[in-house]
Image (tube, rainbow, N blue to C red; front, side, top):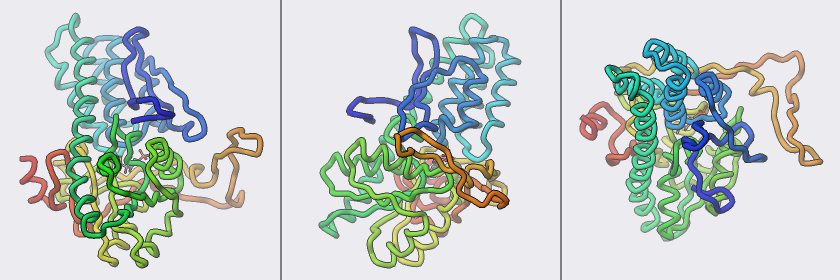
Length: 358
Ligand code: MRU
């Protein structure tokens, strides 16, 4: 997608300098900085500090992290150890483990002379596949938006949470892809963007990328979705997911569950968009999904522009107050109207998922 009219992906391999390039998302929306990842440590750090974030992009970064590990030392034991360290860098998004396992499987039995090329090709393939899958999610979700538009014959108001946009993937996004496709087709859409405290990925990233694509949107406080739904000002919700388990229960950014409850109470359709790389087929109990707890400073400090347009971080809580920062929650499948995947839209249930994928 575009930033200031120029097309970008979120991650790519720079052939000339033999480094991985990323957009440093901790600097958005006020600064646009492209950063080099040169070592496996750089890749792990980028994931931990959320320079890259969003489950599919984390997966792609891990795949390229394996490439960087091989560049440092092409011994398979070192590469496997690097894979384990990558998996530990963030716990909830399943794409990370999926990508590392896929890379290691591809590399086993490959000789030392070829291992780098095989790894690089596979990492690129993971990215290409993600772009294709996200595009198909868009085309499948477009049909739902189109149906609402044909009935309503007016702007479709879509609420989204956090950033499941192209910045969370390689291109297109998951939740935003149907929106981009609808906009391209001339369907009038307007997006309610949940600010998404504490890191504000909705405000900092989703609104930013929608602005760059000229899609009308408004940032709302996380607690506002309920009243908008009661007032009939939300036609549908589309969110992303970091891990959808075999039962169709959905882990996503903290606050998603409350939106799903409000949607359920107000008969607003609540869709979750995901590529199959986000499905955790092994987990069948939502209590077994690891929920990341992050540093409470994400809550107590906010960053923004000061009066001189310099980025500044300030404390907003009483100095003596403690805070607690869970990064994800789980929405039970019963509150999900449907899962929008690259293969089609299915019921959020083990049956629904199995019919589409097995
Ligand atoms: O903590 P983050 O920013 O990595 O969280 C990821 C998200 O933005 C969302 O939870 C998203 O909806 C799923 S990733 C497409």
